[in-house]
Image (cartoon, rainbow, N blue to C red; front, side, top):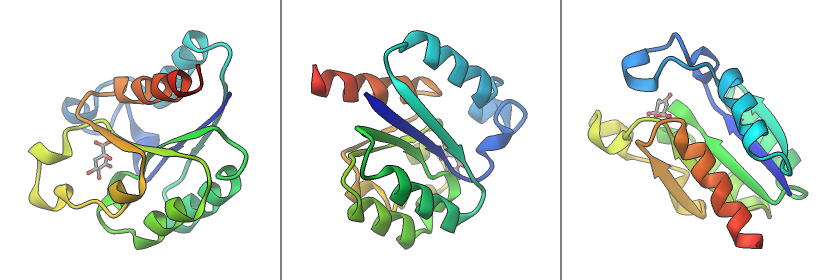
Length: 141
Ligand code: DQA
């Protein structure tokens, strides 16, 4: 099974960025634990702070991966282009947010990607990524 993880802007700063909201683990540390936990999954990982690069990566992995776990970060709330890219590809996408976007500022309740996704996980910390992967694995079991 091939799963792509795509992280949007500022998620390269996980570990030091607002640790009270996003925790103190870096994504690289977490990714290493994911690879140990799911040894049979082939992971690709991509992070960018640039909207168009996220669109290009969705297009690149979107036709030959079994699932995509996407945290569009701040672009969730603004990007029609990322929503359109999800609609245009074949692979199912699960939207993940580390924080509970519904319990924060009003603007974080708007998502331009949710309606195009298989589902959304928010507020469960980094665990949201592994829950999304487990969903994809169960779907093919
Ligand atoms: C986030 C929530 C977004 O509102 C925010 O802009 C982020 C991270 C999350 O994972 O909780 O950068 O997607």
